[in-house]
Length: 242
Image (cartoon, helix red, strand yellow):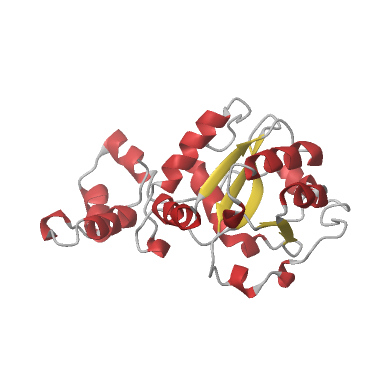
């Protein structure tokens, strides 16, 4: 399940508010893992306690080139409406590429209000391939739930105008070297490390496999959502649009 102790404790209180016998503090879970677990079992369990930096880009990719950041007609993140910035309404997404070995990659998309995750299979990192895949994926959602997309300044989004023309979804770009401006997406990319270990070749992951991983992420309770799950929150949004 890969839930953290805090997520487990919060979910139990959220799901069984009137049954104290089913409540446990996350400190108790941590204590049990550190004190009671031994050997291989302890090592396996402790791997789920910390989220290390996510497997994202190869070293060669992160070395900035002169062209990196030069997106023609880019609309700055500073021009996003206030309703996007404060997460007041759903339908505004953050995106990025996550890289594995062998020049493999996928696209990750996170809805800002609900933290709902979608993973998109890619057969390449060139702009045409990435934009085509994002257009196809965008058409799976109602327009009310996909109004904008915030991306970094990678060259894979040189075709952002074609994406907007095809979907009517506005793309906003982070300031150069400012990944923290896509905080929800950065956090999700870190969580993906549990499902896609560093250095793994992800080219063989089917879209069905990626959907399965996304579903597991979306069914994990989040502290920022009052220990509801992204799936619960997103379902509420879908119901409101229906």
